[in-house]
Length: 194
Image (cartoon, rainbow, N blue to C red):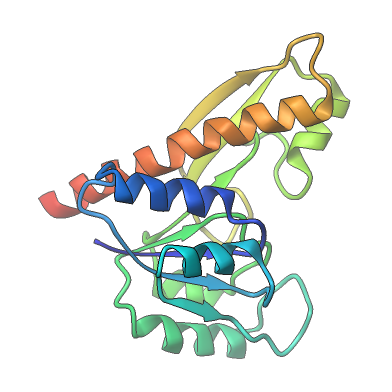
């Protein structure tokens, strides 16, 4: 199952996925490429350190939403990797409708809250400030509705009275690093049954 990771940041989830692949924990999933919209992003450096094909996404606008034309260019570049699954791992751009339709039921995302609570940006900070005692992370299918696709799994993370924001964030990210590779492995098993 050819799998491509999209990310914009440090790439800690990508690193966890690539480590899981090295340890034969991704089932039939094979990471064939890493795409990023940020030239100096950590995720591209991680791709280099694992000798994974990497691709810089050059966008015509700094907008948080990728244009239809840029979406077509990404599809063209991505087609070289023949992806069966696209994994969004800290990808901070909104994909255009045409891209999501082209890869329908092939894109997953991980979000650092228990959806539908705290959709969108800064989810951990907002949950912490709201005073929730349990938050966590959600893996879901990607649709046009931001953080609104069908939930695949969720992992709850308890906030202790002594947790500050940094500690709470670390706990949620640690849960992400366990669950995301697991789900990719599970999807690869289902993929090979069909």
